[in-house]
Image 1 (cartoon, one colour):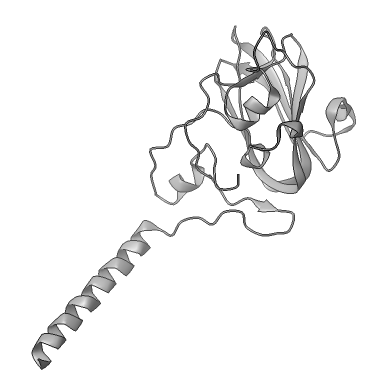
Image 2 (cartoon, rainbow, N blue to C red):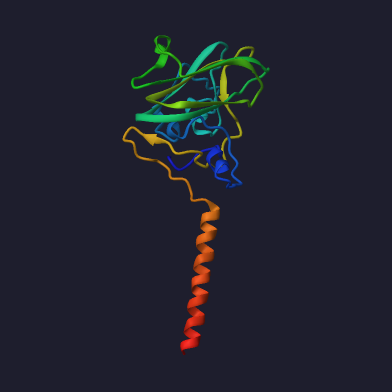
Length: 213
């Protein structure tokens, strides 16, 4: 799960390009975990599993609380992780003011978020599909990642019914062990320099062989 993600911020900063397209995902470290790793304040299932919390985390659809007001979804990442960015995509109708908070904890949060300080807060006008990008200047650590939201005039929901097509890892994320989970590709100009050097060497070697023969 560490080599896949939705957003392309690292590739853009390196001057690379990609044709990747995707639906939403909150964070790669919280994606593609066992189903039991995902919990929510409510599970709205009108004859389908479309509204499970894991769909919002995995970018395979959206989660809907099935009601107005505050509601949360949570992922147990299995061990303490270091996170530098989280993106949330709203799902709402009608548009209006929504509120969102992000919590990280080493222990299960659930309905106990009231005693914690959020690592990110947003309150403002959003439309369906708005992406909220929380970038932490100081990376945050925790095992349980929780998104607490209030849908305002809409039922509280997150994600996109279209789901993902493919992912690309946007940045180097580290685990609690300090090891890099993804290494960015070398700069394309550097690769081109190596290629031209190799071609030149092969050409000179061929000329030298023809002279001595």
